[in-house]
Length: 268
Figure (cartoon, one colour):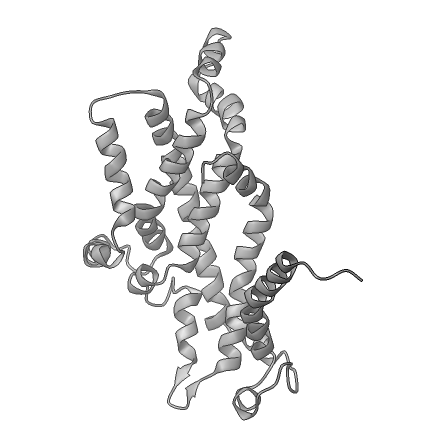
């Protein structure tokens, strides 16, 4: 038998170390607190699905996932609706202050979310949007719109302007051209932008926690309920964390080809 190549050994070790935290999370989710804290083991001791049953049957738990998915998909729809025409304008037209405006959009992405918490909090209380899904969705637009515009502008600039001109010569109106001709050409960019918007909104905690109370409370906030006078309920927390990975994994699965092409084109 030939010797194991150092490259393959390093790659195997890297994959093992990468998957170890995920395995440990799932292992803990199948154990009770007593088993987790009682002794060290490499596999589940007395495995049970009680933690998952608790989450899937308790409305205060599973509604956290519903709330999170609701405002995340609302945010994605709003962001793409706004970012697509904005990115088209930046890629096709030149106007006074265009570069400064483009940089200003990106500067919003550079600011920490805590800077905007107080203005959002007071504004939403004033207009009656506090503790609603649309409140969090709109707040996340402040960071996701610049990111989406930046990504989409790169993909749109790669499409020759002659495509636009030929469509107009053929009698296409702008809405028809944009939907039936242009969007299919940049579908990879749309998929990449949607993926990054989903991931940011799904894992963001500070704004989601501050702008919600009960009706729109996301799962990331609900998970803090595991803290009590007796300490953390590690098994329940691990089960909630495991379930939290599923939506992100599904999104990655559905847009994996778009992400790969985006990296290949140098636009991500």
